[in-house]
Image 1 (cartoon, rainbow, N blue to C red):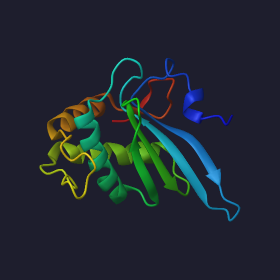
Image 2: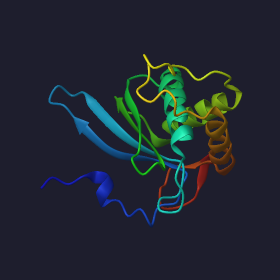
Image 3: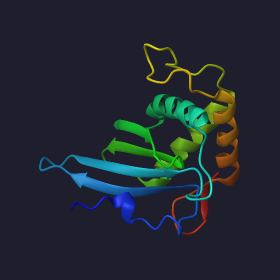
Length: 156
């Protein structure tokens, strides 16, 4: 059976919020694909409500593309404690953390959530801009660590 990287992580030992390089794959052509764990909340202690999680997903997916080149996907974690970012080329955890911080600052001034019609979204009724803003404030106040096991805030 293949191993899943996130299932190997000791979720009790990490200290959120953080940005962690969770894996890299290099294609035979030399192209590099990176996967980042962008953790907002402490695993097994808290979880984003689905409306806030969903709205943040929309806002991060759209606005993060203005901050970083090569984004393939931004997806919420099933445990609802953060997001995965899949991106081409080499990026540092600090670069990703700065970009996410910038996006969360934009969330605070957002008035309209994009792509929330039945045509554009598979669960268009489950959004909370208020919740997204509250969790953005919470994460921004705590700042991001680039070490998942030590709370050494480098991006605030």
